[in-house]
Picture 1 (cartoon, rainbow, N blue to C red):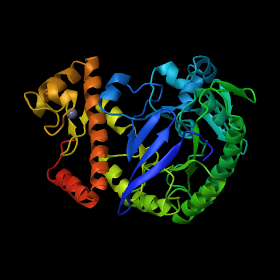
Picture 2 (cartoon, protein in one colour):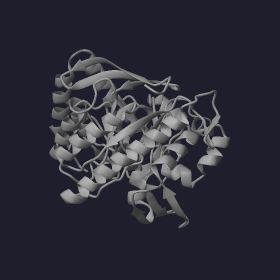
Picture 3 (cartoon, rainbow, N blue to C red):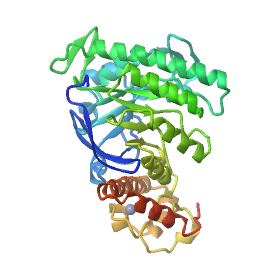
Length: 394
Ligand SMILES: [Zn+2]
């Protein structure tokens, strides 16, 4: 591998599921792992101390947002993203392809890159694969993602192929730029080709695209692996396609990826999606569901999601999830959480987010233990049985 500190080791397998350790300059990540989403350098509603208390080993942050505000130069002058935000564990930065697709005004994509206007002030920008690599080198995340083109679902076969091929050409350019930047690694920060590199041990992940076509996905996977990255992600899923279609694409794609490198399923998903994707060989996840839904009053529990806004919880003295050991469940009743939500107390978001993140990270801990003891299939079955035992209210 190019990066001196980055490595990955599969320690156990159980059917298609893998348990492993991803090592970065800022520490180890036990996989399968879930990355809380800290879009703007913070997970909404909670502090880094809260994240550490629920056992988050890696944080996802977003290049698009940080590039627009406060700017990559400013963060590089602070010594990089870890120093700026005060988080000493690993960070992965998303490249912004999805945000340009979904947020930016008047975006046009051509061979050179993505031209767009900022959703904040309308200013014009051109983001190329090279520039996305430069910005992430300035941020100094442990893992940088290549710039990819995101496709709307559903898509015709023609545009899906063109988009997949463009993403692959962009990946080649992104890798060339990354290798040039890190060719002469020195003590951080060092300047390379006019870019201040704040983390000499950054790794770069390629992204497999291709919509819901198994053929395009396979071609994209083989082409991206041929370019050669520290690891591989599957992008463009969970965008409206049926669940079984997504699971089939995940299974087909992981078969084309090397065993010795991490596999990251981007932006997915529900607790059930995590269990089913681990069964198909996925090692890394991120998703806004636990944090965004917490702020809307939805709590994930071992018996399925509950909506804390509901009148039925007005005098319910039980914790959100009696099976949960998080701070929220140890100290707050459903009645209190419902009250906080209804009077719009800031702590409603904090307490709900803490619980949901704990639930997600605890689910991953359960998955890892199950794989380690060769009991993943039993875990998977019990997990689904528990969720289907009752009808949910949300
Ligand atoms: Zn809890």
